[in-house]
Amino acid sequence: MEYKRLRPSQTLLDPQNARLPDGTSNDREAINRLLAEGYTQLLALARDLCNRGEANPTELPIAWKDGSKYVVFEGNRRFAALKLVADPMLADDPAHRTAFKRLRDSGKKPPTTIFCAITNSREEADPWLTLRHTGANDGVGVRTWSAQQTAVHRQRMKAPVDSGTTRSIAIADELTEAYQEDTELVALINAVRASKLTNIGRLFAGVTLTRMQFGMKQASDGDSQTLTARHTANQLHDYFVWAFNFLNDNSVDAFKNDALRGDLLNNEAATFLPSAADSLPDHVRLADHPFSSEVDDTDNKDQGRDSADEDSKEDVVTGGDDTGGGGGDDQHDEGTSGSSGGTKRDKKPERFLYSGVKLPNLSPNIQRLLREAKALPIDDNYATACVQARVILELAVSDPKVLAWSGKNESDKLAQKIRGCIYRLDPDIDRPQKTRQDLVQAFMEVNEIGVVYMHQFMHNPMARADPHLARRFSGAFTPLLNSINEAVE
Image (cartoon, rainbow, N blue to C red; front, side, top):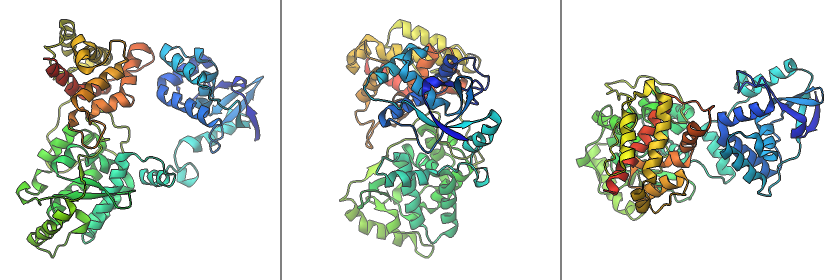
């Protein structure tokens, strides 16, 4: 292969791009299909190219000369991002167009060329594309880092590490140390850690931390955390055996929000929970009072009480930073679904949009629309439900009484209005001491991609609705809508 620097204007996006399996007829169509597939990610890529002034040198695009142009086989998103920065009018959606125009006018300069490998044919490029996009391929392809390896790398860079991942590593480390004597449990913890690291932090989040009286405390080194509890390692032994077997056997869908985690504690884990009456006067670090099969638990509890006064002098954060959310589609699912063992109470999927919402204190128009939404089964009307989820939410947070209460204006964006309501209900929602766990998922949706999806259903004809998304929006925003109604009573 030869190598050449190509300007975006010299290239054509691949009409047979695997990301767009039904093909495209021209560059404009390909660009808008890529925007529909992942607008926020494509905009983030464009911003990164502008900030750095160069493309990632570890990933070489591959192109094929076709007449006076080069067809891009590998690197379509990079060239699409650069084309959009150069000409935002290529985007059909006005919101997308505005975002790329703002980036173009920011003064930051994207690379004018990208170093590419030039292939003689699609067939010559195909083996390299396969290795790039289909996993490790017995070591020949790309071996992606595990969640823990990613976290270690980010720590070396002194870059932020996702709080859920930090919690996962801390819990696995602390329990491995606390239960050294139980080699089977340690082996189970290590197996889950190797294959489903971030799921640990998601199970031990929100309601689990609060109900189990666990705390995550900053360690003396300032870079790690320790796990504290109001029970001893011996008292919690059976619970952790159950919890890590459950993690090993199930996907994150079984515990992705506080409602599901609460059900698990009330039902499947109930027989393994220590008695609240046996709790210690304050939090102690589990690893400081490790499990021992030879120690009577009364002695173990006394040891914990002896050190509780010392631990109580230091700040303990309970509840944690719940990155697992409260009802959303989890994008970090590690592992496949399986049986948890024992009796499980199945939670029926919501049949109608916002079925648990009542808004008698808001305008009659909103109440009428809510009644109509509740009359349409989600499975039969999911495209309508995805649109109605946004419309009802926007009308509610834009109601004059709600605006006066939240301190927002009619001209504010939807995300700003939603945040205004959430902060009014819980000013600490973005801090570990949050008081409204039921609002966590709504807060995640508005800060991440949920509200962006809602806009897509209103403005982008290529956006694809599905029943799962409708239920996700309904579950995330039901507590917020009911709380808004009560607040403006």
